[in-house]
Image 1 (cartoon, rainbow, N blue to C red):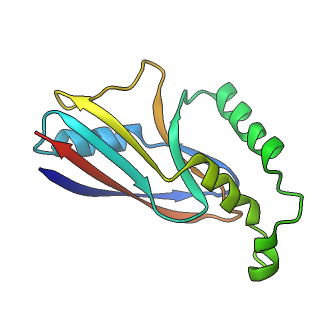
Image 2: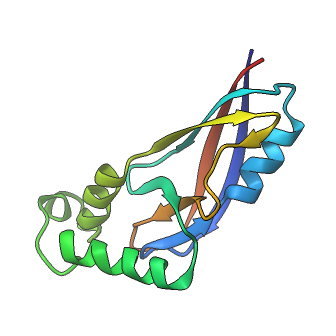
Length: 138
């Protein structure tokens, strides 16, 4: 069985990191599936999804890491085509990735103690982001 569900989040852009674990857990609790896997996918080409310890120090380190590996203040070819100044956001999103698959048992995600599911909006402006969940199993 496969159940598809959706979560919408308003983001601030500029490496906004949002913990969506509670929302995913709520959708999983309502699903008619006890054990299996859940795929979490974010639409758009300048946002990503992953797991992280959602604590201020790690979040600061994570944001600073993106500035080191894909800085905003350098030239990106994408910016010449569209003029929107967010070339860096597309590169960052491609590195982080748009989906994550997590196993679950007895309707409980098998995340580690300090592991939360986060979306990261790299764009240079606020957005409404849609997350698609596909819950598969028995």
